Image (tube, rainbow, N blue to C red; front, side):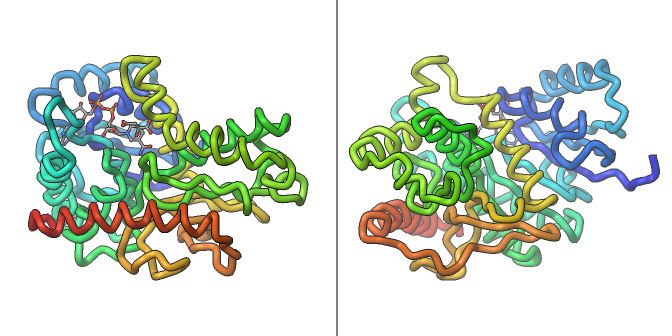
Length: 329
Ligand code: NAD
Ligand code: LMR
């Protein structure tokens, strides 16, 4: 093995997503079959033992690409030298907790993690925030890492993107690989807007192919936007393997690029494109090349899409204002 190992830090490593994610990273699915990895796992002290158990299992897989595993309960040490950081650990909403309480509890996690990334991560650090509320947690971390280029902080809407592909493929009777240019706009929440007016199947827009505005508005959009809650209802726990799979897809695409004639969805720092206020971390259609993302420009947004995008972006602005009020940014 001649390539330098890539250091990947994963927070919440002992949780459900962590368990579905770590084995795929170690097997080479995150970065490529020829890229050795070193794992640095961050957990809270009470969960370190469980993370050690997962590390034992990782050892037992004898993955040729896995060059070492270190476990920490201290963020500063966990992010030292990290090239990729997957911020999965977060404080879930518990009974009686208001939205403000949730934002505050997560601010207590993502502020120090942003500071730790700023202090010790590698120069090429790329951050994906999975822990909810993902967009605003990413904003908090980014705001506390002033020396890291803002575009290195992203939040995950790839699971929503994949959910939209799956729903559309069933309706249109095509394979997911026949669908190009799917977009999730806005927040990873029930206000998100999965857009079929720019998605394409065989060169036509998906909206034209489906030709069913009632399904689009009253079935497709709510099914995708509320899928997280439907999984919780069915499984008694939030999505884990599909979330881990989407995290793998997100980083793999960011590092290795989008295919010609296609794009993906990532929540990234807005530059004001499509009227999304500068600085908000909002989901856009993006292309990736040479390890960088770019927001797809020049799409025509009709009134229907405008209203949906604006509603989700307004929610993001409210979350930003709430964490500002709490002194978290
Ligand atoms: P989980 O409760 O099973 O695991 C979370 C883990 O994070 C726990 O082991 C916990 O000890 C750890 N943790 C808590 N605070 C930490 C901290 N400060 N540092 C390090 N670790 C910490 O939860 P899960 O099912 O793995 O989900 C993780 C998060 O991902 C949740 O916030 C969930 O809502 C979110 N999620 C996001 C998406 C998405 O599409 N963006 C999809 C699914 C789940
Ligand atoms: C999901 O989309 O599956 C999760 O974000 C749901 C949740 O609230 O954890």
